[in-house]
Image (cartoon, rainbow, N blue to C red):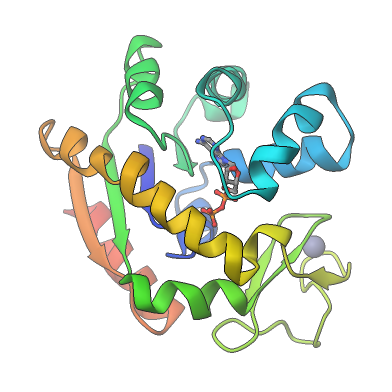
Length: 210
Ligand code: ADP
Ligand code: ZN
């Protein structure tokens, strides 16, 4: 199964990607995580991306398209994958089509703007393994410590309130048009993001079985 997860920043794409990954045994490909990893390792790509990420802007299309092309050609994507955070612009979606990548479903997780700010401000992440948590909605077993790898949890720089507003406007301008793009192909399913992660997951799983 080849899937795309759409949704505003903080809609819970990453969390749902993990759940789908566990249930269907297909890898989650998160462009955000790949870029943050490159940033941490100080690669050329990471350095180029840093100013965009920190400002809440999108990294240039050619950079992310290159990342995804490379990642999808790896063996573990042969039986399917979940794209989390890609495509985020129409040119990215067109590039995916041009690569000849067949998409089975596009799940759009809808969360109203009013709820996004608190979701993002409470978000905590593990920079080592990429796991995400929330102070209120998705607490780790031990405060400030990653359940998966034991590393310290931190707040992402781009989750600061000033940057969140920029990311939301970028989302509405550049990413939201993808809903139409995929609605036209008949692949789009819309899931309303719920207060509880598990409730959203149940709706996402249901949408995948339809
Ligand atoms: P969120 O979904 O919470 O915004 P991500 O981890 O997916 O977080 O993305 C964080 C940042 O990484 C984005 O604000 C952007 O700068 C960059 N990024 C990730 N995916 C893409 C993409 N497909 N195109 C351009 N930039 C991207
Ligand atoms: Zn971790």
